Amino acid sequence: MIGKLNHVAIAVADLEKATASYRDTLGAAVTAPMDLPEHGVTTVFIELPNTKIELLQPLGEDSPIARFLEKNPAGGMHHVCYEVEDIEAAKIKLLADGARVLGDIKIGAHNKPVLFLHPKDFCGTLVELEQI
Ligand code: CO
Image (tube, rainbow, N blue to C red; front, side):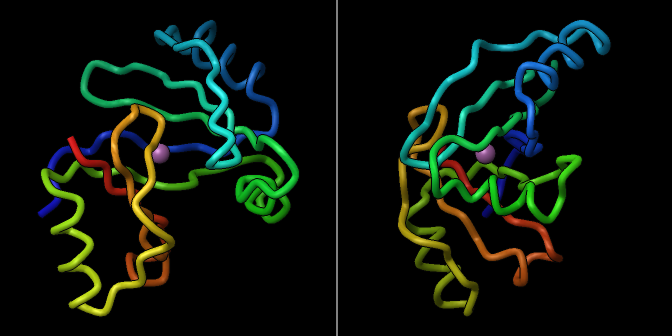
């Protein structure tokens, strides 16, 4: 069902500083910051030849990233995102297999449908699926 690794997301307290580390110290190509109010995050993508890194900073009062940073003040890996061809079919299969799907299919950072899966069902790691 899952295809390519689309990105690995890292939660950060200071997006400007994190972006500068990747751009200046690691020499990576970075995108401009983008606010995603529906997800409670501001994102920057680090573009690597074979995949992307998504830096996530909390946006707004009730950001899930703010709660993550309370537990991990230095920041840390937040989720992995795998590509799927048909997100509706993926959701039906996951639910049939007893996996916990978090919320509904939403439109993600690339203007494509995304779905999140509970970390307890996938080795302690939050999983995002993105329809390509
Ligand atoms: Co993501």
